[in-house]
Figure (cartoon, helix red, strand yellow):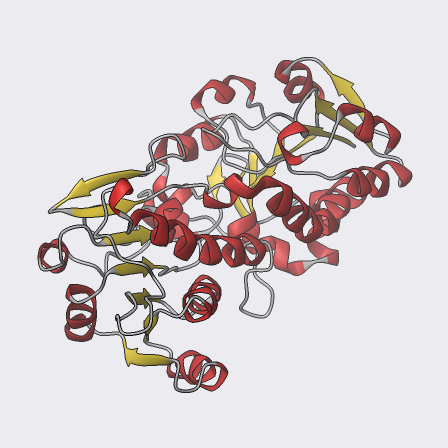
Length: 370
């Protein structure tokens, strides 16, 4: 098959889907890889690096899209890319369709097979989302600490404090991959950390990892409100695979927070997990907005800021399935790796992942690959 890698168009999205080593894997098994010139530069990968790995470099995005059997990219296609959609094309990327009805419609209308990294599930886990979740969780604390400073409009608080002065109060909603990564950084920086989740086992694991370093609370509206109103920095990480994120942080809670406090919504790709960030993503160019005196950071591609790390982490996780799709075709790849089945969000003009159908008020049709 022909695998196409176009440049990413999302604001300051510096990642690229493939690294040279992955190109070699794909071409050695008889596939062809075509890459838009300059696609890897922001990740420190030159066109020459790709050529040496067996890829062909083309000058335009159109050449990639029009010739590829599989489009392998990082972020969801933008409106200006919909014109390239066609029946039978496979797009393998982060799709986040629950919060993007327009893209969902375009994929359905053009009978594109849309495979979302974020819904591939193996043993109840999300192997293609995990590496970016790890990075986003770490960066959430890093970005939040920055916006707590006065020049950024924050309260003027040093996250770790100093002897004789209290550190910042960091509240992390969700104890999954993002929440655990955020907890690790917040604890390492010396903050006072509270983690909330409904999963007692996850809270127990965190408590065992960070004994006497964190407070854990069962996540219910009363506990969330009490924790959030006293927080300097809130990291919201709630995720339901492929579905719209629930808004657990209500506007009334935000109104009770101190002026200059910060909320980082890591669930913004899935529509946002607070009343005020819901459907209101920001970008690396304009990362924040202020409501009720609170700074809201809702960048939808946080790991894109550290592309030289993120690109390699992402390619390491996704290449196995890209190679299976190219070598075996869609049906063969799903037989070899059944976890790919839940990754198929659209197929032959139908929505084949139930949470996406529900979020977009579409009929759900069980996947049947002929």
